[in-house]
Length: 270
Image: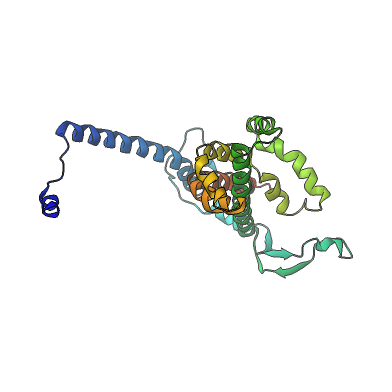
């Protein structure tokens, strides 16, 4: 009888006024999200259309929202410049053992326009720094949130203060360390100083504060080690923060390395 009654029971209907309020809220949210999407996508639109404009249109005081004349001059200048091997895989610390102190390569790709090589280097740098930053920031943020040790508050205060400084200021002393490790003229000198981004550590610490302590304590009581707890419980819960940090880090790394190269090429300095 109970099963039959459950089947015959009609679903609850919402009051018409509530439906109108929700639909109005949904429409307003869609409008705001659409406006924000257009604002965030406009710089990309401006870069793409600007690459097809003439020099006079680019430097005009009155902005030209849509190119009146489409040209490929910028791309011709970009790909007709220097040439470089498509990839160069060096032996780690190979320069220590070479007679002239130059790096030793065990794989060198074919020659291609240098712009393609810069793009490959940028993608490699952005992806590698993103992965390493997410790993180190997640571990540091979790330790600052859930562990108690001497100097924890002071360390976190320094991290927050470092967020107020431009990234270039923080990189200067770290780049000198890359020189002492003979990594100054390699792509690793750009990757390693970025790892441990202050904003990433701050984001992970604040997000880790919301992880229930009872869940972590239950995992320890069951005999799971700290490494197991961190990988099986903490990281899955931190996925939203990791995704946010990954996007920010990739975009920042891409802009810091590739965009200045394009600007210098378009200005004819290379």
